[in-house]
Image 1: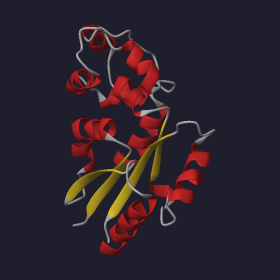
Image 2: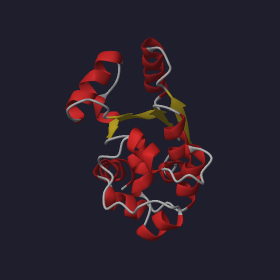
Image 3: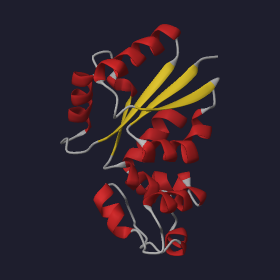
Image 4: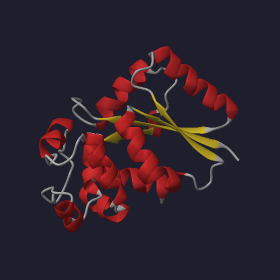
Length: 172
């Protein structure tokens, strides 16, 4: 049985996948490995991608859309950096991973955490998320952990289009 490697931008993404999605992704794989790639040299990531292919394993690359106009532009930028990347294995988060965190909260869970309920999270940025953090949390990480404890994948699929696409493409 082969492995799945998931390339993620950073620690917030790793925390999210570890707490919410890793178990879901495990079906059909011997293991799921999460790799933070944003701080790596492009040639090193390309080497990982080639090695994964040579071993017959699978991979996904998850990237925030950031300032790119659309998903196609983001994939083109990534392909420019990582020559061996198969863009069909790229999932683009809109707008940033913080939106995926907030998407999984019911209105009731949001209120318990001291957050204003949001009908949708497609436009949530890191900066907007940081402004929403109630004062009683010592850090973003404390809030992330509380969100993961109350996370509903079904609610997230309704509140964030890119999360819904990810779920459809990778988990259904």
